Length: 204
Image (cartoon, rainbow, N blue to C red; front, top):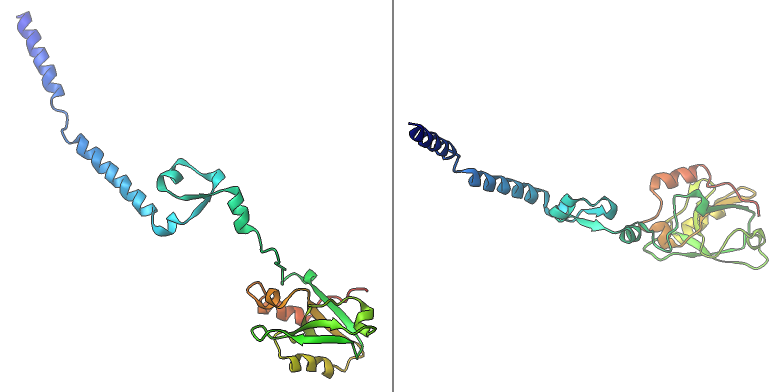
């Protein structure tokens, strides 16, 4: 009887292990497919092009295939152009108050920009004696009147029409592209600058 009992127990034990689900492999495959879908969703073209700081790279970044930007590449992206001049920094503007005739030789910018700039100073003239203006300075305002972008005649006319004993000129210290190009000041910022009469007249 003991022998029979032992056989029955063994058979029962074997039977117990035989009832394990047969679809466990299928479940594993389904889960893997689910995560593949998640990866595909997060690997959309826009995200594939996203860039991550190399110091913040994680295993999931590598798994997703997200690009990593090195420190040198980050600096290259963020670095401004060598000839960049901040056109919304009052420190890059100069104002002078001069009597007429000022002795300034103005020239018109290329037609794509408009406006006029200082081409030179007449030797011994008032502007030359003042010593603040430089060749290439862009005329921005006459008194509180904005003249940037105007034609040669209209911009110069604002100086001629001024009845002040000393006419205040505000100029941008940079070239036409820096002032009128993509990095130029916003119209709101420039309007405010002109309304306040430009920057303070510097002592020469």
